[in-house]
Image 1 (tube, rainbow over the protein chains, first blue to last red):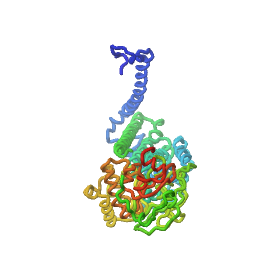
Image 2 (cartoon, rainbow over the protein chains, first blue to last red):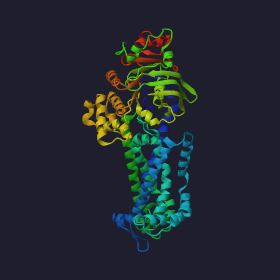
Image 3 (tube, helix red, strand yellow):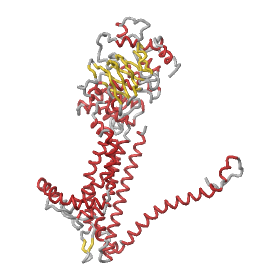
Image 4 (cartoon, each protein chain N blue to C red):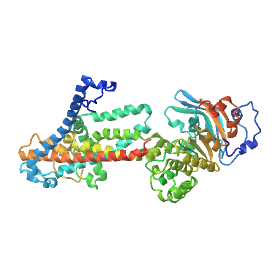
Length: 326
Length: 287
């Protein structure tokens, strides 16, 4: 491989290697590409180091007890993360519970049911949702979604299902439900486009096998397409989860940013990312800043775990698929 | 090259046709034949298209009940397309369509009142490459078509076991019905697919080069199975393997460029073909 290790015999086979541009170019290419890769890894390590380093005052003060403490009192310097961990997980899981079935429905429509001419345009429009800057989505949440929830949807849910704790209490324009819906809108394009791509890879021989047995279109999808894509859909949902867990701006705009765990979806709440985004600029003490960075460290760990889970699932799927490959 | 069963019912009742008239002409004239067990398929003036490209050109052919008909011909001659028109799988391909009549027991499967899923339940299909459903167990693969008909529990188990016995898989797999169908060998997978097809008790089984992905031993096994299955089913098999056609088929049809050149008793097609193109093909001069 190395250009410097020239064999003793210099037959015509080796003539090309002695070109000056090759002798400089190849090592140079290796150095440049290696540096680029190193920069990516380096930044990642640097950020992780910074987060844990800056959080150290709070880590040494509160220890792991921070994770289980329900408190956010900048005046008396009492801080804890559990409300925000709960808020982060609740808003994200709720969003995925809505967006996963929606995304599968969209993917089924786009791959099997929509008229051929409508498929590509619809797909592009759905994926364009992902291109809306989250701050604009948050503004829409404040202007349109909040009042709608406060005046229409939440009173209606309360009237019909008020006996379920999730829908108890009075309506509010800012709160968990609003955040979950915004996160749903943000994750649908991601989850649906990945799911659609997986559906598209279903080998046609299996689809034909189902049709030849007298399956209808929906029966074919249920027999072949969804089971075949199943683990891949889980991977797509977890990628969507990663997106939802980390979203700060749009959630900050609509969730109300208060600590507290509520059974109901209506009252204002908070998430890790939203709490950092909304309080960092106005933090009044070093301990408050360190506590906010501690929240960031927790968020980082949660998203890394979600990402690793997604990778694990995807690699399992690909490994399992090899025996079916044509 | 001598088929196992040269004297079918059909040949007994049929007077020797004049040598000069191709067999296909005679079939076009819709002669009366005594009704046999099961249901035959009769194709009348069939045209098939991919977009604007007409790939099947005005074909008429009879597939007699409880007989094996082989369709031979070079690649691209439209053999597969013809059988895919019989169970209406052709129309699943984008921009593909067909016209003409395909009659099963006197009913045109292209009639607007006919439910396409019903057609495919009565006319089963086995594909070139074994395609057991990858996420399903051996049992579920065979049960998959039955479940579509709403069958559950006890009756389902009996029918699955019976189908596995019919294809000779029962002894090989009865102790591992819950394992994935894709874990079987290629030949077993193809027999599993045949079991899946016959579990729903069709009238007709279409086979699209069912042995082309299999080794010679597995191929022989499938050919024996075809011989057993024709007692109960009308079978149409597309094959590029002329020896296979000679071994399994009662009658053989030769296709070229989307046209049916000749259809007759297998022995005759291979020994005294009426058309010069058939002769050139079966003697290996082209294709």
